[in-house]
Length: 197
Image (cartoon, rainbow, N blue to C red; front, side, top):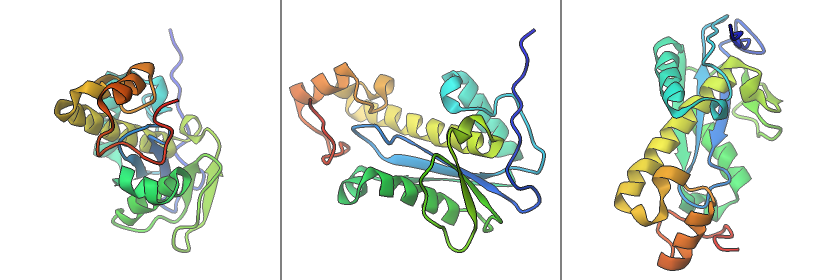
């Protein structure tokens, strides 16, 4: 029998800690999306893990579990146009700040996936490298952000099917780059990125 993976809920219990993560940094098109999630103290579930290790079906299942049980949550975007105005690191942090802004109540602490962040208001934060595989609240944020962005890119695919966004979700696959070469760029492409090698 396969052992269930149960991640600790947060770094600091009793303060309403928010886990934050973003998705879509390496994409050639579409927004960067972030989520902030506050889970009940001690909350654990085997589907709360790095979103990349879950199938699409499992991620959607996990999203429903998160929404049903979270104390608070928010998903936010920074558009391709905004990414082009700054840089992807600043845009990723801005997306996480927007997600935190969308919470009903300011968290008492923030745990952030990765090693780069900028202070949000006066709330203390901790960066956690590969945090989506170490803390349930960051894993939950990873899942909400990824499902949201994947659904958005699948929706955009219906309007612009030539790029194959239903499959590549905007990442720089060979097919996506060839489609840019064949059909040009769309209004959803990040013009500051190297769209063609």
